[in-house]
Amino acid sequence: MPPAKKEVRPSSRGGRARTPAFVKNQRGVKNWKEASAWLEWRGIEDIECITPDQAGVARGKMMPSKKFTSNTSLALPSAVFMTTISGGYPEDGNGFHYPEDDGDLKLMPDLSTLTVVPWEEDPTAAVICDLVHQDGRLVEFTPRNVLRRVLTAYDKRGLKPVVAPEIEFYLVRKNPDPDYPLTPPVGRSGRPIGGGAGYSIAGVNEFDELIDDIYHFSEGQGLEIDTLIHEEGAGQLEINLRHGDPIELADQVFMFKRTIREAALKHEIYATFMAKPIQGQPGSAMHIHQSIIDKKTGRNVFSAEDGSETDDFFHFLGGMQKHVPNALVMFAPYVNSYRRLTQSASAPVNNKWGYDNRTVAFRVPRSDPAARRVENRIPSSDANPYLALAASLACGLIGMTNKIKAEPPVLTTANAAEIDLPRSLLEAVDLFEADEELGTLLGKSFAATYAAIKRAEFETFMEVISPWEREYLLLNV
View 1: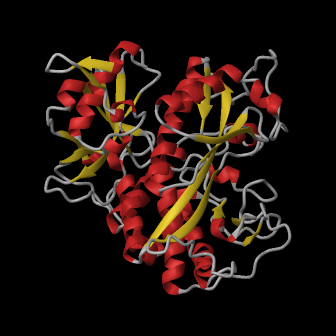
View 2: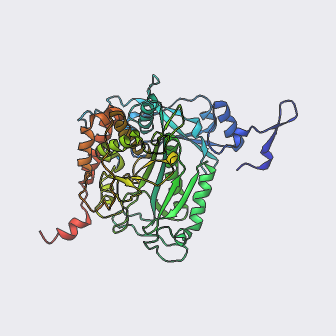
């Protein structure tokens, strides 16, 4: 925070000019003129120009702030968005072709996302960027643009989605050697954190100083946390965000992940968003609450004037039931993700829906008609938030467009029954590639690129020999 003396500056006429209100905004400006004043007022030295890749990892460039505001052209190789999580590249085939020239894509800063980077020692800011081709066309296969493409399809129907993500994650001891299992951290009590502490205030208080840093870092970036709780797992926490525009909320999840990791490292522990980081403990989810607003009336289209459910509500659910299994690779993107999706666990393995039923994939929480919404409980916290939101909203839109009828709601426990979802990454990729309607809505070049990346990641995983294989096969077969 700048010193008080910067509140007022001498004017060119020798008087004292008030600081414009916008420079005090924690997040975002309207134009480049405001950006220059915002950066100068804070004494910002460096700018991180970042964008999410297919895994949701921040990619980009850092530069001096003066260069940032001097109309400098920024670019990244297209290969950045065709890279596996381990740094490799997929093989050509099934509609994917690696560009021979590996040409540059232009980074276009979204100044509404400009914010400080509070954990850096030197005054630093960050801005999220979109990707465009050299002629200005949006790049179809980059995650932020995939979500924007789905929102454009809603806009053409006069609709606007509203979402609210909930993100679970684990705090674990530092683990520099990946051959060793992850273990819960030691809290302020001096003891390793145990499980079964769902909604425990004492469990949250074990990490008071770290959580204070999360709040301070978030406040410094204009990120608003709705609630924070301790989940069932040992050292597992959950952050809930306020509802709002899907791109803004995806940006927030993207930034929150960086924020939480940095806060944890400050306290010599890791924060991980792996779907199933610790054997025997619950997995981590990214639940997505969704409602759809009529842009003309401002009314929630899931509720009629008399407060009852509408056809759009049931068709949205029908689309989710039919297409979410085909989109599972965007909600469960890694081999580890499928360790979370097991029978009789807290994560759903079905495509059922129900009222306030946490054992189904699509829960309808109790609410007044204006707040009627559908909670997608399938995504895991390792999912790219832009792609998870895009896929979830796309499935619902296909349902409303094609008037897909939802099955009756489930009134009992649904998670011990037959599994309705793909059980493995490769099976999920096959279903994803076969759903032409979903692929068209998300973008054909994205669908081909994403599927190719996931196949390559699976092949990389198959090169690793697991402890299970050494334990049960080494001397027995």
